[in-house]
Structures are given as structure tokens and as C-alpha cells.
Image (cartoon, rainbow, N blue to C red; front, side, top):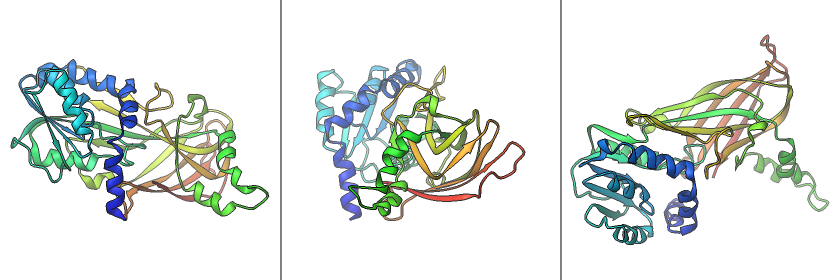
Length: 330
């Protein structure tokens, strides 16, 4: 049921393994630390809200940066551990934790000066807390207040991935002597979250979503965007790949990090959408089309993705018929 799925999502964040992965992600945690700690002039004496505070690491950064009051809202049982960590580090008088859903809790203040949150999910939006951050922004953020981070950009590229596609998709053609191609069709519809080598990327990248968290609305997270990728070398194309960048532009010196294949690895990895038709690409060819992303009607933490694409030569002449595929991240 929908409630069971939501309960699972929140309860899964009570397990320490998830938080260990996130804390050890030096790109994630290190850039949040730099954005907050190197901008103590923004935090000094201010009231800060952390949406989805987890073990409380962002609350600790904010308190150490001089915030007068830090409020962490967290739905899972991990909040008890966060309180113990807070007390062990001498911030009992600064940091307050509230267990519950942001949409349902009452804060001890009317307004906050800064909202911090690590809300991003795989492919930026899968199981993300962006809707909750925007709810908190509209309800509690003072006019002229800051969001950390305040911008997110989602990108698309294309890759050569014959070996792994054969392992993951081709396997279902013959399973112990039986035809399992019906399973293959279902597997094709599930994007793969995994590390993609930079050398596998055969095209330029294209930004398909640019969110300004200061002004965007929940409606902006269901979107359709055109893309055009330019092939950089002669190779086969087996999949599209997605990743995102996040930036903290309120900082004295803006802080940005990427989850691209060219960057340092993160726990978000990259998201691979395998294509039914393998494209034989030549340098200066293009792969262009439309991608539509929306929250699933039954479970809004899942994503439905539709991709239409066409492979053309440098003169714009089609090398193959246009194709349409549907995916679901769940």
C-alpha cells in the first residue's frame, strides 16, 4: 500500500548503514561543510532549519558556524542517536530535534533565516525530499533568507556499455535453457544506478533541468525537456546516463559539486537508461530527443520517465527511425 511504502522509506533511514555511506561520502559531506563553515558570517546568530536531519551532521556544522538556534526535523528513529551526538559535542542548548514529518510538525519559532537540507536522490529526484524542502521554504523561511543548497542541475549524456548491458539485459534471453525475454522487457524499464567510467561517455552533456530552489515550485519537478547530444568519437551507444550538479550560491565564494562520471565518486553514482536499439555512432553525429519525468501517481517517491530519441548524422539526416522508451525508477 502507499502508506506501507512511505513507512518503509522513513524507517529505512533509521538504519546506520545508510548514514554511514552518506557521512563517508566526502564529496557530499565535505562540500556541505565548506559551504557552511566557510560562511560563518551568514550563520552567526541566525536560526537554521535542517530538513531531514538524519544523524545531525549538518546541524552540527551550522551550530559550529555560530548559529544561535538550529532545528533539525527528522522522521525516523535516528533522531534519538542525533540527540546523543549533539549532547556529546556540547550543542544541547543550540540544537533542537523534532521527530515527525515536516508537513505536520510545529516549530518552536515562526520563521527561520536559513534552510539547510541534503534532499537529493538518485537522478536528483528519485526518493528526493525536494517537495518537503519547498514546503518548508514557503512556510518558514524569512524573506531574503538563504537555502543551502540553492541550485540543482540535472544532466544527460550517452555511453558505450556493451559488456555490462549484455550481463544485465542479454542474460534474460536464455536462462537455464528457457526463454525469459518477458523478464528482459521489464528489466529494460528499470534504470540502473551504478558507477559509470568517464571513458564510457561518448557524447557531450545536456542540461535537462535547472532548479533555482529560491523560486521553483513543486510543479517544476515534473518536467519535459528537449536534449541534443553531440557524439565525440566513433563508437556504439547502448544507453543514456543521468547525473546532477548542486551549488551553494549564497556563499561568499560559491561552492559546487558534481555527481558526473568525470567527478569524484559519490553515493548517488549515476543513473543508466539502457536503450533497446544499439546505435552505431560516428564523430559529429547527434542523438536528440525529448525526456519527460514525473512522479508516479501511486507512489510519488517513484519516477516515471519517457524518452523519445533520434540518431542523426552531422547533416541532420536520420540514421535510424525515432524510438520511444518508458522507464520507472522504483
